[in-house]
Length: 459
Image (cartoon, rainbow, N blue to C red; front, side, top):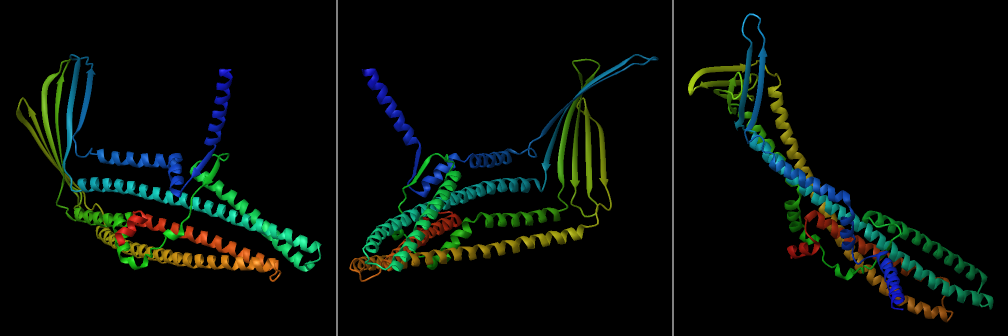
């Protein structure tokens, strides 16, 4: 008996568990964002790739450390008129780049670009979050619209039953009844359209967040338009300063302009060489272990930025048994190495000027986009206040209209039109509230701060 009871309890528990797991509830847009980020393998891999590239760039110090080379050679020759010859040699050499004017600049630029790639990934993640939030609110609007349309349909059906009874008793003109019936069918069609739209938006949200199609999704968010009361246009200057300081694109443009100037300075400093030292030691003999060590040091100076005639100078010193046994010097140059030096200089100057103009234009566009967002946000707040007051007045009027309709002083079709007007106002209020929340989100992405932090910073 106990086994049977336990089995029944286990089956009930499993059924309840399956039912619980088959439904997902989002209490806010942030819940949808967290769920989507956990299920988005693409976002996870992108972040890992950016971090890996940052690490790779940071440890890429190959030009700063000496490179060790090892070479081994064996030679056997047969001679008919003399004894056979056998030689073996082993050489170790180091190649160290001692001085390179562009080395530090290139390393710093690569690291800064990797850092900004990481910041861009973070900004891309915020954009991804905004897209999820937009999908969430679109789904929420569709579900609220369906509720409003369903409520309107139910009230219309109640009135339709009364109309049918009056028409049957001859207390209502046939034309009034047909007019009301036409409106009722139109309302039913709008309700079905709202239901289809709700299914589409729910499917889009499920796809964006990685939810299975068969899983039930519930949105328990309560929109609170009363919390949206702070107008932002008076704080335009403060918000603009925050946006300028947090804009990754502006920072990147400043860095690229700075490094373009440094690159010009390096190219103009033609008298600074690339200095390389290559010490080596070699052992030779007829058989192992090898002996007869021989040491050499090669120093190279390369002046590749000299206009028209780049120059390379090399000095080689050889030591045997701790004595200097050989010195060789060489120089190499070619003239003309190129005929576009002055044109290249002009192109470099124009490129720098183009970057500066691009930066200025982007700053203007960014300010224009920000100001438009702030003004639009404030317009939404004023629209919300007007719609709230309109909704209150329509509800009061509807109560009187209901009494007048019951007393026969107002046509039922006029009462239904007021119901339709009320439902449209409710939908407009929800859409405007969601649009205000979306504008807040866009402003948060631009400033890199949460909206509450931004409001506190402005105050």
